[in-house]
Image (cartoon, rainbow, N blue to C red):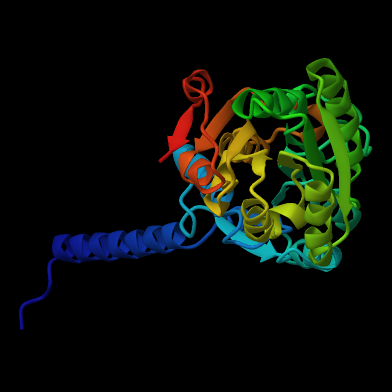
Length: 339
């Protein structure tokens, strides 16, 4: 048998060495470097006091805001949702549950939700998506420099309830008395009523306090309003009134009372009019805070935003139901008319 040449043996060894080196390189590329963990997908906790159906427009606006920034739920970001279904006593446990899941950021709206989240964690960033009064409740040190682990957007603007009353006065020319329905457990209700009294006095309109503590008190509140010859009912936003808004609107229609709501996203319940911050816009903007925090910004340094976009909506179907003709000049000012 002829002997294998020395040149051939050398080439064979080189090929073998090359194949070993190539396999080692491919193996190194397929495994994380020593001491380095694969990058985890960011995880958000979304805490709501209501149900997914009541706040569907808000929730979808937040998800759309994330998509606009390049986040695809289930692909490069995950969201754990918790809904209290209108039962505020569940909020502390739900907030604690999200903290145990080790979410990177908690997103919520409303003072009760924020207080529950703050109690559950002092380290996880919390983004408020259109919450109530963050200052008087001590949730932030100031709007310009929140100072803690909470930042985001507030829905509070001092003249909104006054503007609501003005629009109601123009839409119902005979208006002399208005019932104001709010949740007695909501500290913002009493504050807004005082602000409304100032506008009411200037308009020559009387406002009637109608505080409720649960849905079983709605009917008695409406009996008090009609007994005092009220022409309209203003519904101040809270988890209680939002959760049971359809029932409230039905009672108003039965009593032939014009209604003013604070959010266009709730007009599906059948209210006559709504004026207030565009909550879908606030929730969409909340996604920008999530993005900044994920990129390294600290909540303490991110200023709280106030509403910049407002909506006035009129429901002509409801107007017809209660026998009211909306003046043309008021219709012309509406951002949206439901026919």
